[in-house]
Image 1 (cartoon, rainbow, N blue to C red):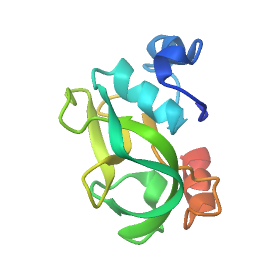
Image 2 (image 1 turned 120 degrees about the horizontal axis):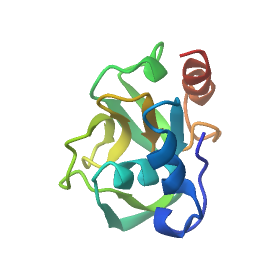
Image 3 (image 1 turned 180 degrees about the vertical axis):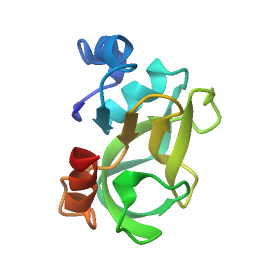
Image 4 (image 1 turned 90 degrees about the vertical axis):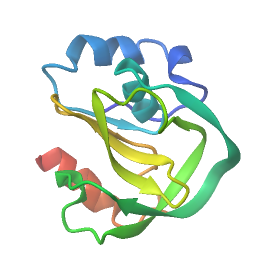
Length: 141
């Protein structure tokens, strides 16, 4: 699991190195900064959002089936704590979007070939509906 943290992935020590080294062979799950790092490693860019999302609960829609969302409704509220996001208009050749917010911001993604996925929101937050289910699904996946 790649955890959240301050800043951007390039400032997060060995985060991206770990994804590059182990992505093809390990099951990796990124949260917030970890999610962004996964996006960058596999070709996407980050954007600085017009609106800062710190401690906000925002509607998210599942747009592609993924086992981490098993048992969840198509739309759910999630807790967000970020001002950067994976740019949906950047290179997504190696990744696919599995959830997005109402503005089209990427809220979850996965690698097309490897068991690497991430969520921009915080499943551990009380602001995220069914966050424990998401975590349990990943752990049991």
